[in-house]
Image (cartoon, rainbow, N blue to C red; front, side, top):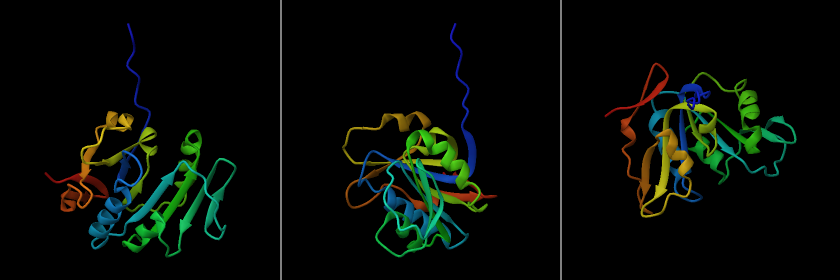
Length: 182
């Protein structure tokens, strides 16, 4: 007889998570449209998490070790995290963490996160948390290359190259918890 493995992920109902089927499928575009839509009514925090550690100028570093870096985005550039800031997020954090160190990096990040709704772009965070809402962005007509995301039952949003098949007004916040209005 086999035992069912218990879900050890932590609930974060105030976090909307966005993953995708690869690069350039519209994850950041979707995140920015959600931030624009929600920031008119409530403060939103943006969060970008990547497994690739890039060079950084050090000015905006909040935490750093050899396995992860946590930055607070303050610059106006073309970077994804800066685009979230420009879309209306009150503050944006950028985390670069090797996958096996993401839980530790996320734990450190919690000290900086306010108790506001968070719109997060991350391919790996769903492994350690249960977000309030989880979206998977995919280019129309492509094969799912990252099926491990589908285990967590995300809302799938198709990108036909010009538009995303989603009505942003369906996202609602009630008592700081994300849900979809049907």
